[in-house]
Image (cartoon, rainbow, N blue to C red; front, side, top):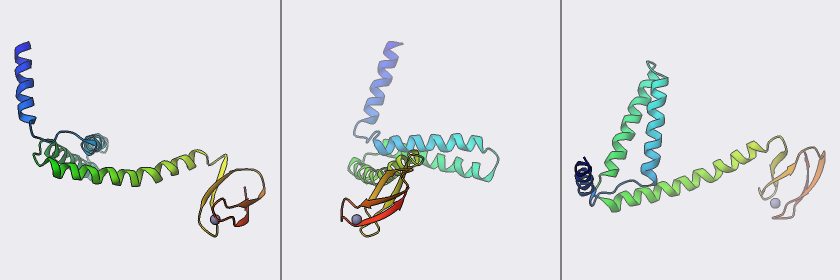
Length: 142
Ligand SMILES: [Zn+2]
């Protein structure tokens, strides 16, 4: 049994030799395809469920294609692009989430002259605000 497993591992290693494997985009694809397939089970017979199923399958094929690809430099460049995109999307999303969590305790607003984003605790009535960036003064209801 141990021999068999070793053998299998060797064959797998030989098969994967020179192939790309899993990167951040690969992990994202596997997570996304799982979500699609599970959602397709939940939405079963409906049209949306079928669409999710095929999207999940397409993601599955794509993730395996990338994993076994021998064009590693191209796959690497795809991953770099994915990471850039992720940074661009994740930053603002995290900020929105932080604002949403603080929505009961803080007000968020922009400077009317330069657009600088600011926050201040709620419940102080009319508050005089000085923009930390351009020093414009204005009042804001809190
Ligand atoms: Zn300003």
